[in-house]
Image 1 (spheres, rainbow, N blue to C red):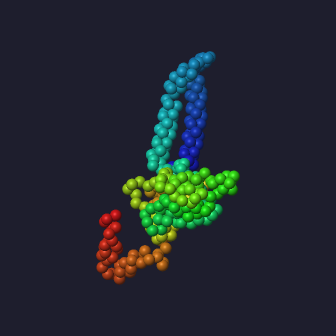
Image 2 (cartoon, rainbow, N blue to C red):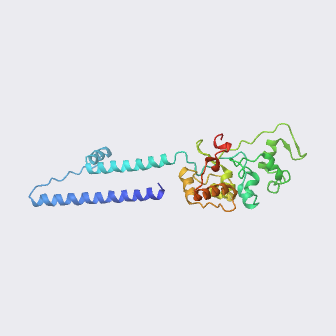
Image 3 (tube, rainbow, N blue to C red):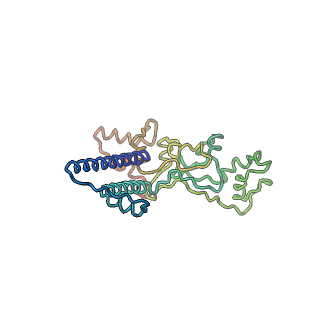
Length: 280
């Protein structure tokens, strides 16, 4: 349920309330005119000056139509709110934790145009994209130290890399007490959901931005996509499969040709002998 739908529902409820109030006033006026026509004396309700809020509330609570409408309104509101909360349970879109090092994808992937897979080298060949070890950072920062903005001093963020590696930038030597950087994971999937990066990057030919959003513009990374089952299924329903010249689909196409010829198709022909089918 989108915010637009909730806003529309609120407008409908407000209009309905106004209509009920107007109709209630019209009905009372017509009843008074009918009773006056029949000669019935109508006693006016005394106006109490300085009536307390509690007294006003008790008087309004006797109006059955108003009580019924407020009850229905509360049921609709809390029902919609509860549905939205439950539907978004476990969805962390927009999650942006503070990392131990302020690594800017906007600078590295955007301005410097470093390929994503230079750091996340597991994306094209394994299930996980992998977090780059600090030695990958040192391929550049062994020489690039960003001293211009810091009055000749090395950038404090680069110094965090040196400190973690127990590296002396003056002597260019490593010590014996390195410590890993405790990065905070941003994109999480449920334990029962299997996702393989290589299947999507190498076989499917997807760009990183299709799942991770405009990563090249993020000074600080956040989760751009909801990563829900519905979001994944929608992509699988609409995405074109490019099987031409793609060796991954050669076996599937061959089996498809066998089916068209009426030949026998065994599980082995569909990859049923692969170890990973059972020993995953």
